[in-house]
Length: 203
Image (cartoon, rainbow, N blue to C red; front, side, top):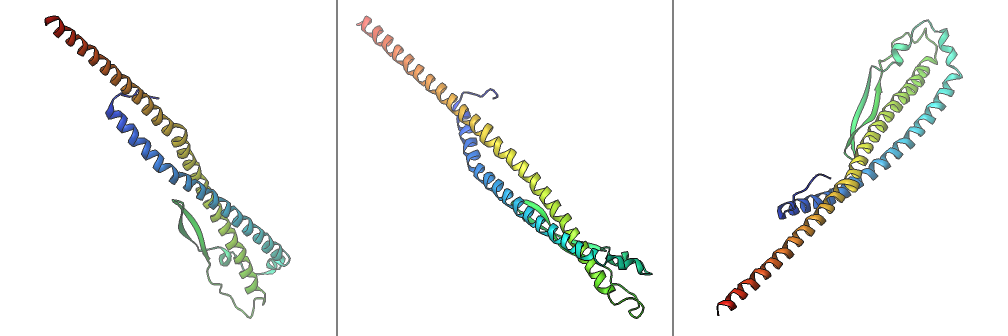
């Protein structure tokens, strides 16, 4: 703890600081709780999406070999031309939210290509969209965890350092001022007694 001035002005400054810390701490604690809940919610959502992705992948694997018989490259139709991501403010943190994956519209001769191709492309697009959404959820979790670390550090700073320091400073200043007041009262009593003794000696 740095050296503090043992004055009434410093006492007021420390009291004001303590009030500010005590007023701000509950807000930080609430933010910490909200972030913890949001992380748990996102982790549950991630698990749900990863399970769904696994099911979709297994369903596709059954007939995926059919794509090897095609004479065209379908990658251009299953690669997103754009992934649309929004932002949501969660407990003071801007968190990405997956909205959609946009794809190029397939163009091929329906009379030449097999009937299942449309369904196959759509199934692959759904799988890729889920993968993109999972990636966004993971980014959101990383952001929330970082925000939680910073908030936890601030809570600890207030709880374990700032508030105890201010309380200790106030205690020390009050003791010092009290001692000074007692000393001045004592000195004034001694001075008064000396004056009275001087007056009596003159009479």
